[in-house]
Image 1 (cartoon, helix red, strand yellow):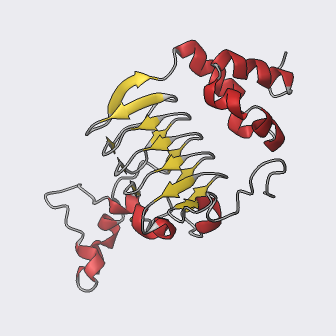
Image 2 (cartoon, helix red, strand yellow):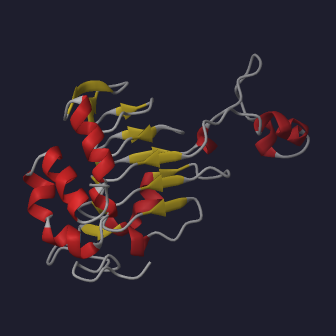
Image 3 (cartoon, rainbow, N blue to C red):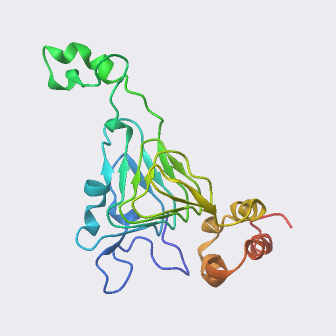
Length: 221
C-alpha cells in the first residue's frame, strides 16, 4: 500500500522526531508470521528495533500474529504464538521428539499440540507495559490492555481489561456507541479524511464519527 497522502508517511521507521525509542512497525517487521498495519508503533527505551526478537515468541508454526492499524504497543509486551504449546494427550507434556533419534518417533505427538489459530489485534488497540498476550487471542478494535495483564481470552471491542488473567474492567462506551464506532471504522477512512477529522477521532463522540462517516461516504446516509 502506498504512503498516505495528506498524512505522515507510515514507512518512516522513527516517526517521532528526537525519539529513537519509538518505531513504526510496518517498515521494521519482516517476518512471515507477523503482519502489522500502518501507523502501529512500538515504544522501548533501548531495543525498539528488536520488536520481533523480543516481543514475538515461539513463531514456529503456520499461525500468524496480525496487528491492525493505529495500535500503540508499550515496552515489554510479549505475544506468545502457538509454537509455545505442548501436547497434553497423556501423562507427560515433555516434547521428546524435538531431541531427535531415537525419540523422533514421537514427533507426531509433539505436533499434535492444540492451537487456537492466529493471534489477532484489532485497530486502534493500546497494549500497556509488560502485558502478555497468549496464543490465539483476539483483541477487538479500540480495546485497552492494562500494564502487566495476561490476556488469555478474547477481548471485546472497546473494552478495558486488566489482571491475570485479564478481565473486563469496563467498556469505554455503551453497546450502542460501540456499534457506531465499529460501523464508522475511522481507521479505514482515506488519509486526508483522517487528517481532517483527527480532533474528532481523538476527542469527539461516537455519534459525531458516525455522522462524519456518513458525510464522507463511508456509511449510507
